[in-house]
Image 1 (spheres, rainbow, N blue to C red):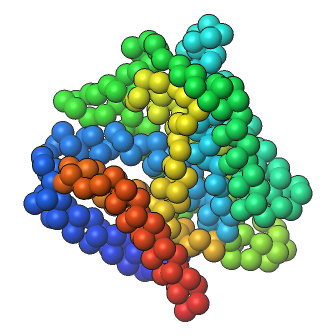
Image 2 (cartoon, one colour; image 1 turned 90 degrees about the vertical axis):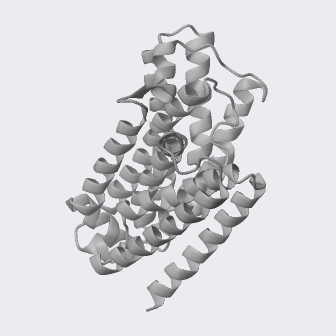
Length: 313
C-alpha cells in the first residue's frame, strides 16, 4: 500500500474510532474511564498478537485460518505439561511456544513444498489443531491452578493499572512494523503478494519468505496462548475460538489488501481497537452479545469490498 493510501485508510479508521468513543460514551455505562480503557487493552492483546502476525501473512497474498485453533492447542499443551506432567511453568511455556512454531512450520511446508493454496491448507489445519486439542482433553478437561507468578502475565498491572501484557503487544507491534515496513524481507513479502513469479525472477527467495511468515504466525499463536491462559486462569480446548475472524478483520480493516501486495501494521493496530471498542461498548450499553458478531461481519465485508475496489483502481 502506498504511504498516501495507507494514511487515508488509517485516518478513516481513526474517524470510526472517534465515532465509537462518542456514541458509547452516551450509550454505555462507565465507558469513558481509564479503568475501562485498560480493560479494553487487556482483552485485546491475544487477538492483537495474531493480527500483527497475520499482517505479514496476508501481505504475501496468503491467509492463516488456523491461528485460533493453534492457540487452543498450544494452551492445552501448556496446561497438560504444567498441571499433569509436572513440568516447571517456564519449560511448559517454552514447549507451548514450540508447538505453535511447529504448527506454523507445517502450514508453511504444505504451502511452499506441496504448492497447496493457503486457504485450503489452513482450513485443514484449522480443523486438525482444534481436533487435537479436543482429543487431548476429551473435550471437557480444563487445566487450572497455575501459580500466581504466571497468572500475573495476564492479570497483573504496573504503573497504576497498566495491563502487564501491554509491553508484549507493543514489542510485537515494533517487531512486525520493522519487518514489514523497514526491511528487505518486508519489501519481498509485498513483492510476493503482487506477483509471486515476478518476485522469484527478481531474486526474492519466495519459498523461504513464505515459510518465515507462517512460522512467525504459529510462534505468535503459541505466545498468545500463554497470555490467554494467564488472563483467564484456565486452559481448555476451546481457547481462541473465533479469534482468527477477529484478527483477519482487524488486518483488512487496517488497509492490508486481502489480495496481497499492500500492508499496514499501524492500520492493523487501529483496526484492532476499532473492533475492541465495538465489543466493549456494546456490552456496556447492554446490547445483545450477538450484535457484536453481526457488526464485525459487516465491517469485514465492507473492508473486503473496499480492498477489491482499491485493487481494481
